[in-house]
Image (cartoon, rainbow, N blue to C red):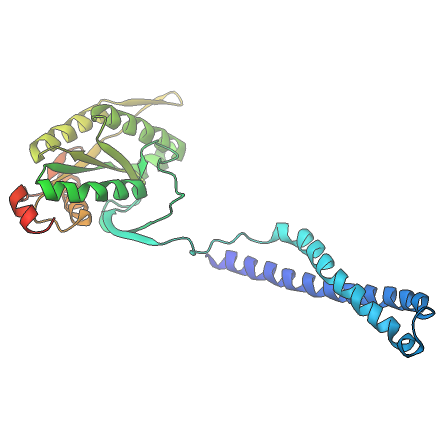
Length: 297
């Protein structure tokens, strides 16, 4: 939490506590007054031994009823100004995934994905799958690929100079461009391919039943379609390009994060080569179905 937000939250919490204390004190005071009046009224009907203590007993009973009521009223008055909780109680690590950092950088870095069963499967802006859904779905495919020795590949697509595009043409223009790029990428894919947004201008594509050469062809078609895109924005025609890193899935990969790391490395090579191009990670050795079964996959 930023320092300013922390100070504001502490101030609101202090207001919260003082409101409860004031409400409790007021309830006790009102209870004592009401108890004295009611005690005098009831004293005549009570045994002599109880008459002296009747005011205190009735006052305590009334105060016990008024304290929670007054506390609830105080919270209803103060609570709208209290900051909402933003704790991490519901965030659980699913899998450490190495992927491009969102927006400001395209370097591959460790990313922890929240495992929230109620999290949406689709990205709100682009309609692509979320990173969480992608990792869960690809993990389910992983054992099948390794067991049968099937081909599969992964693409990491990053909008070139996405931060500068947002700065020069405003963030809404960048959002609109990303939506169009996602639409073009989706139109290039097969129905059973998996397209997800990993944050910022980064899209990741899982291609089952696809070798590295086939994945390179898909990546080049996505790159060409984006390069030919001209987004009409406030009387201007805004252009963008993408760089794509490609990685085939092979026996050397211990898990999905290793494939994503390879695709991220290939993406960095594409950026270093001048952007608006496709680069591939080294072709991994394939695992035969017999070897996969003997290894217990």
